[in-house]
Amino acid sequence: MGTRTRRRAALKTAIAVAPRSRYVEAMWQLYQFPLCPFSRKIRLLLGEKGVGYELLRESPWERRDEFIDLNPAGRTPVMVDEGRGQVLIDSNAIAEYFEETVEGKAMINGTAAQRAEIRRLVAWFDQDFFYEVTGPLLFERMQKRIVHRQPPDGGALREAMKAANNHLDYVDYLIDHRTWLAGATMSLADLAAAAHISVADYLGGIDWTGHEQTKGWYSGLKSRPSFRPLLAERMEIIAPPKYYEDVDF
Image (cartoon, rainbow, N blue to C red):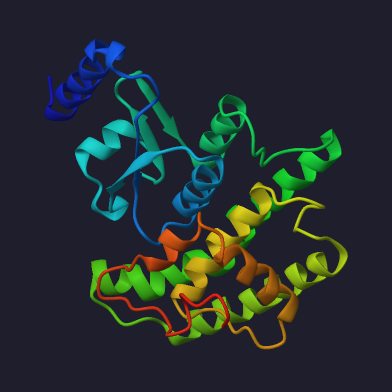
């Protein structure tokens, strides 16, 4: 039996035999790193719902065997409650789990059409915004520096910032027509958007000029108790702009 197989078997055994009677509520551990937008989305959701958890730092680019055993895709976030034998993988699957299991403060709410609109916007940020803005910024400003010890590509950064400006134009449009991104109430769409925008902002990829609607919406989210811990965190050797943590910026 290989080392990895033994570790996986040991993990399954540990989860299986953990004394569940000691746990009144799930004791969640969240594997993440400070600039993971998908983990930030989940942290905002858990904060809004009042779900407690322990943060565990994970650098997915290191491809640790123990983490790959938890999630073969090697991506964050992953949530684990060993006491209940539960492992949750993928930010949208995790969000749906807590929507179904935690009463109150619904973040995927309303009619079927309204819920579809929330999911559409979550997908837009997790896919389009990530691949055009957050992902390139993370690679150029974080991964190249920490992992590859290389300078960023100026052309790639300019393209990411140009794409960010186009995306913020659309957010401006939404806020012009709605109270929150998907409708009359705050939803998972707002949390997903704020998670990605906050990472892009940390990495200096957002030019707020001409985006007063988005700026006002984002300022309101930054002032929420669920958001403040994220703004206080720092990624090693990468500093955010001076205004990053300010609510009024």
